[in-house]
Image 1 (spheres, rainbow, N blue to C red):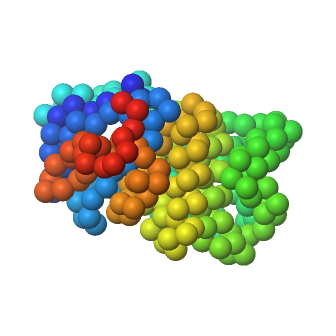
Image 2 (image 1 turned 135 degrees about the vertical axis):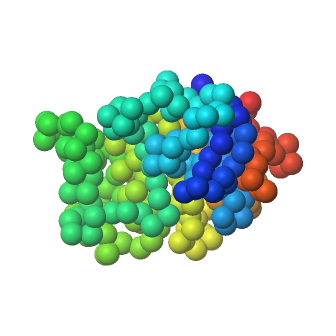
Image 3 (image 1 turned 180 degrees about the vertical axis):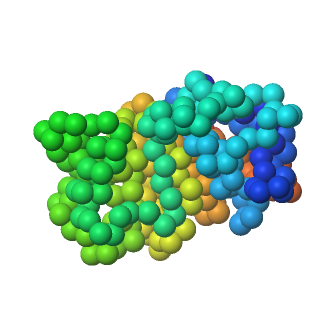
Length: 233
């Protein structure tokens, strides 16, 4: 199990947003977290990469990639984050440098030293998302969909076991959004990487079926069976 929460309470500041969360992600799984704005989707995802802490008093279990989030130390968080990729709605690319330099910065900051290996890895991930020819362009020279593809490439750099995508299609038109989710879906089914994606676009679930959790009324519920197609359980 890559992620396993049991009876975890999730807070945003001092407000309880999700109570008694039970949530699981297995290898090579595509998992949706759906719900209206403000229901706790982003807060849930932020706990997975330790941007938010899980309340330790009542939680029964909160494990991510073999780490116990209830006891993890701050100095241990960077190592956990190196094993995952995170994709944001607003891309979060560095606008003062080209795409190659954006990706090189991530690799060097996570311990890569060989220029040859860095070049090869960047070419590989850019090729995987169909953006190899754009590596010398600046972020502002790319469309929103292209920037999100670069963000996916960035998430793939360190061979992640899991990708966490927080509303990755929120700023994209429907056609581009479908292509982006299709790319993430393909990644989850052709390698060793699982994907957790939050979205309010329910139409994507029929096209790219997966396990589905819904945030509503302070609770997280597995609602996979409500959809016409189901994930491998």
